[in-house]
Each structure stands twice: as structure tokens, then as C-alpha cells.
Length: 474
Image (cartoon, rainbow, N blue to C red; front, side, top):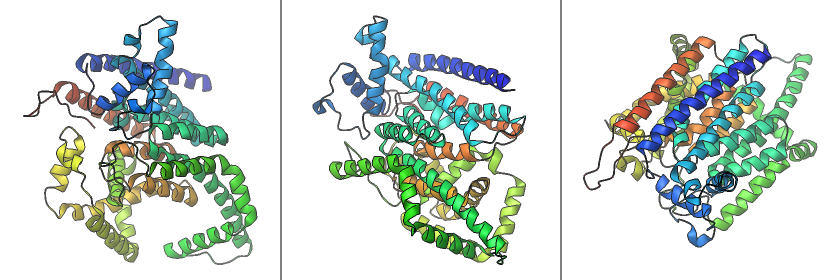
């Protein structure tokens, strides 16, 4: 069975790479000049390719660290030495974009290894489910699109997933080093390096919690009833656990590579005067709590075969009625967050090349009350996501939620790219869905990708005051 799974994996990877190469060729023919953020990334990479690394050569409009450019030079430069290609060829737009296509192959392999590590292998059908899950996530539309442009997303995902994989295998020093590489692609990836540390801590909490529950069972104490009572009990446990020097020293010895990385990050923030480098005027942090609701909606949209069903809606409504006091409180708090903490970035309103522009215009700007009417849908989305993660421990869920909030809420701009990593981490950790649902999900992703590429390549337009060709994209 293992040998057969290897054949399936090789076939899936080969076919995906072949299709990606054909699409890359179509992109290269249609898009011969830098597009969107490439107007900053490509010239900077070409300066590095030419050996111009001084700070005076840095474009101040770039807000991320130079990880993408350094890796690109490390990939394309040997081609000039080994194959004898000229610098003009190896530093060309096409060659630099091709680096992200190589990252996409790495991401495919990492996703497969992560599914093998995260998901239990106790069913005969699980090999097909793992292959389909890997193929589906590799074709995740928001990520797959950027494999063909010179953006930071594919490399950012590659190093973050690699760090997560090493963490799961217990190689924490390597994981922290890879987390640093992910940070060099996008500063907010430090959150997911912290998540790796959180994963270890959650494991130790879970072990201690099981021991605690076993003691209670042996003492024949009555079970705790009610959501708030259970929460209070968990918080009390965490407080007692954290007061033990033995427990804290054990956690420190396990997570010191991540602590060292986080300390280096804090030094960077202090020295740099913030997390953003370059132009900070359009990247100001704020408490944008509705970003969490947008992520819930985004996740339900792309995982609807697993998260949406009449039975789930019925169960949710029944639970709301049963715990109407708690849900009423959540509703009031959510409405307050929407009312007080909704921010609209100038780019969201001004740039009609992004899908988010049309989502905002045709949904949220239709009427002022729309954003409040969507709150019950956000609550259902949050509940069904939490329900799909009930196989994970309460401590793992807590760590994931903290990292999710930290990575999304400070962002003022509604940008689907910011949801890629938390979505992938989420999708990796839900139980393997049935083959029928995976086929449905894969089919939907294929249709979305086809429409995205068709629109991007064929439905071009021009602004009245600009002769450049504009295209629609994520």
C-alpha cells in the first residue's frame, strides 16, 4: 500500500507541475513587464542579482525583508556558472518568476509530509485521502495564483510549512532557523514560528491535563457542567501549572530556540521602530477585529464541503437555543466589534484590480446595516470552524486562535493573501474528510483557478488616465 501511495503521489506532483509549467508559459507570454507589486520586487531582485547589495540600492517602497531576493539570487546565479548563461538571462523577469514555481513544488511535497505526520494512518483509504488533500491544498486558489508572479507568498509558505514540519518531528533548532527564513520573507510569519513553540506547550499542557482529569476520576468528583465552569477550570489549571518552576524550566528547555528567535524579533522591532520596513504610511497597525470575521467567512467559502451542511446548520441553531444567554453575549460583543473596530483601507476603496474591491463594494457598501446583518453568519462560521477542530486539544485550539488573532487583527487592509497561512494550518489539522468531499473541494478549486486565470489573462482593461494594461487578481 505504501508503494502504491508513492506512485499516486509522484503522479499527482508530476501532473500538477506539468500543468503549472503550461500556465507559467501562458503568463510569461501575456505578462512581459512587471505587474502590481512586481514593479518593486523584480527591480530589487535584479539589483541583488547584479551584486548591488548596499542599502543605497534598496527601494524604500518595499515593506518586507529581502528573503525572496537572496534566495532568488542563490537559485538563479549558479545557472550562469553551470550552464554558461548570461547575467541578462538568469536575472530576467521569467527566471525570477520561475523561482516561485520551484517553491510551489516544495510546498506540494511539504504539504504531503505534513498530512502524513499530522493525520493518523489507521485506515486503508487514508492514503488516497492524503494525496487528494495534498493536491487540493497545493491548488488552493489564493496561493496557487501567486506561484506565477514574483510575490513573497510561495516562499513565505514554503519556509513556514518547513518550520512546522521540523517542529512536529521534534527538531526545534532547525524549525526556529526555518522560522527565521520565513520571517525574512514576511515579518508577520514570526507569529507562525511562535505557533510552533505554542504547539510544544499545548502538548505538555494536554499531557498534564489528562493526568489531572484522571486524578479527578479516581477521586470520583462530580463532572463540571457548563461552558463557563469548564473554562474556569481550565484557566485554574493553567495558573497552577504556570506557578511551578519545574514546569516552566521544562518548557523553556523545549522551546529555547523559538524564544531566542522571538527575542531577536523584538530587538528588530525596537531598532527598526516597528515591524514594517520602508514605506509605513500604508501599513499602520490597528485593532481591526472584523478581520477575524472575514477570515471565518473566507475559510467557510473555501472549505464549504467540510463546513456547510443542513445538519450543521440545524445543530448550530439547536445549540444557540440551548445556550441562548452565551450566544446573545457573543452576538452583542461581535456587533460592538463591527461597529467600533471596522476600518476601511484607502487601497481597498481605490484599487479596482483586486477582488476584495468588488466584495467590499457589492456587499458591505450596499447599505450601512449589511455589516451588522452578517454577524450571525460570522458566528455560525466561527462555530463550524471550531467544531471541525474538536479532535485537537483545547490547548492546541487556544494556541491556534491566539496566533490567528495576532496575524490578522492588526492588519488594516482586507487582503485575502493575509489569510493563506492560517487557512493552510487550519486545513492541515482538521480530520481527513471523506473522498467524496475532497473530490468536490478539488473540483471547486479547479473551477475557481480556471476562472481566475482566464479573467487575469483575457479580461484586461485600462484606466482613463493610464495607458497600461490592468488585470483582475486576488
